[in-house]
Amino acid sequence: MKARLDLTSPSFLADPYPAYAVLRAEAEAVPVDPGGMWAVTAFDRVVEVLKRPEVFSSEPSEHDRERLFERAFGGANMIASDNPTHDRLRGILHKRFTPARMRSLAGRIDALCRELLDDVADEPEFDLVSAFTVPLPVIIISELLGVERHRIGDFKRWSNGLVAIINGASGEAREQALAEVFELAGYLAAAADRRRAAASDDLIGLLVAAEREPGRLSAGEVLSYCILLLAAGNETTTNLLGGLATALAANPDQIERLERDPALIERAVEEGLRYCSPVQGLFRRVHADTRLGDTTIPAGSRVWVSYGAANHDPDRFAEPDRFDIDRDCRGHVGFGWGLHFCLGSHLARTEARVALTHLVPLLRRAELDTPVPWLPSWVVRGPQALLVRRVA
Ligand code: HEM
Image (tube, rainbow, N blue to C red; front, side, top):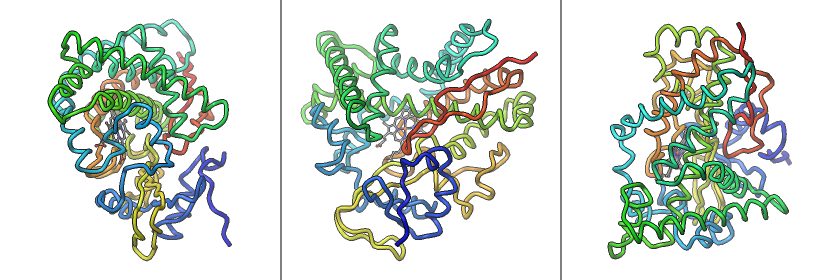
């Protein structure tokens, strides 16, 4: 019998793309570890799964780790809900994340990029991750939610706890991560209480206002909503920016072209979403025996839908392992597809486009330390640290 691929193995975490090619060639869905989940890796099959939410459910089973959040905060969140709950929850803030609204944040994002890079302007070498790619999205989403800037360090720590649990932390690491998550919940519950006493126009304020309308949102769902926005918006954008910096540093000719023609930045961001796939894969659950092509996935199975593998499927993108800003990569699944398509996609795109206008001139006159240490995660992918050394 063929050994199952283990997504936690160091070789997979260092470079998952060769393993995706093996899985794609094997079958439409292949059991992998941890836990015998069924990995779906071909572009067309990934889209098929995402287009059938009534069959491939996003709701965790009683035993899944995500259920823990629902139990802990007393409310569902949209990413882990099917309809009708999903649409009820998504509809509450949907209009707050439109392209026009997000583009209107470009000035603030630009000022923040300057501020963060000014802080390291005199350093001959610095870590781009801790100085720039981590604080940028955390500060922006915190400002949108309406949380105080001095708590930003705490937010990063708390959001790390969330990611650690989703990634399957065990033993002491899990205990530590749980403590972070409960601290976060305590902070957010107090913040929501302040809006119950005095209304505000930030995202927490809007959620609390929805809570007042009968049947629209429970107090537990207010909390879960905030936690989802923090978790979904931070690590992901950080990983896109770090992944883009790494890809560009390996392709200096493309940095030169971006410097000469900033109109190409939009394409570079889309190619970054495809090539880096900051969210490598997420979960679905089938409640009945389900056929995917020639493969039957048994009732009750957990399915791992790999956006990263789909975005590197040579049947959909020619020479997929090449970073190429000239490529037409429309239709990539870096933000998912269909019902659960990323609510924050326009925010992430705006952040990345503005950030690149600062990173391109920086990278043009700098070297990145290699090899890059990647996060030890099969759910999200990005550099843990990026040492930038300025050159004359
Ligand atoms: C480069 C950055 C980002 C990437 C790669 C990314 C990726 C994704 C992906 C793949 C999904 C689909 C989940 C699924 O199929 O189950 C998703 C959903 C979601 N994302 Fe993002 N995301 C990013 C940034 C953000 C930001 C900045 C926010 C914050 C506002 C955000 C909030 C969400 C939410 C709330 C959902 C759930 C949508 C739903 O279930 O309807 N994301 N994201």
